[in-house]
Amino acid sequence: MSLNIHDIARKAGVSVATVSRALNSSGPVSPKTLQRIKQIALENNYQPNSIAKGFAKKRSETIGVILPSLVDEFFSEVLRGVDEEASRANRYTLVSSSHDQRNIVETLLEFMSSGRVDGIILMAPYIHGDITGILDRSKRPLVLLSSGDGLPQKSSFNFDNYQGAYAVTEHLIKHGYRKIATITGPEGNHDAEERFRGFKDAVTHAGLNVADHFIVQGGFTLKSGYYGFMRLVTQVEKPDAVFAANDMMAVGVFEAAKSLGMQIPSSIAVAGFDDIFLSRLLTPRLTTVHVPIRELAIKAVRYLIQMIDEKVDPAKVYHEEISTGLIVGGSCGCTNSPDRSFL
Image (cartoon, rainbow, N blue to C red; front, side, top):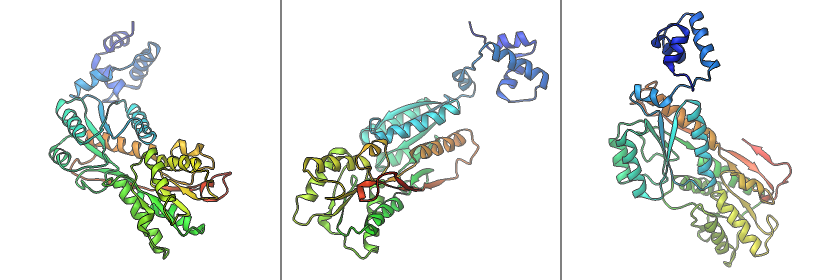
């Protein structure tokens, strides 16, 4: 049977309050007493009850996480980073996948009213209407991920999507491609809009035209990449390169090209965005934009915990944009071994 704090106090010959101060570093304890208490705790594999500590502080010691999906590799990596950092801070995570606007609203209301979480990390591609109203009224600590400037009064962490898309498009142009098409992300999605803006500016600044028939609406899914590519290569004027606004769509492009007997990059060059693990398994290796997903998650958790612990002014709004990097593989015509990274 494991010891509790009362057992340790009895064995050490001190009060429960002294044990609490020693184990939580919350007050003065003599070095000798501190060493004795920690030795007893170590020998008996004592683990403090985080839930009980939370009740004592009137907290749940839990962070609520709302993500658009739990299946997509990108969001799985976000969740992994959040959970690892929360665990390091002795916090739990309560996760919800928001499949639609109504689901987000219901989850936010549950998280904010039930007391089950001390703070919330929200990644929602579309923030408007009821969601905006709920977030405006809420006093619970909250950090937004990849939300753009739709709620400037809330702290947020974003990737520099514009610069990443500009850099990968510029690389294709410098490689000699002149008829560059793009398969965009879903309409209204902040990341998708910024990536399209970066693509468009890179093409325009190079003195090239952004032809309407070289712009195909996608949905950040493999299927939309597949059919988007089919549309591009079955029209009269065909592109010589395609920038897919995320790697899952780029995988769809690879599948479509294979079904048509087209070789990448000799028939057409391909570039993506995100640098997910799957992109590294493609042959040739996908040229893409690396986004530090884990870093984004860690920064968000750390700042949220500071808000919960009142180590930062809750009225102070903090925004951070995290830089991206270019990963050059063989899909654009560059040497494929080894990959070249520009981070």
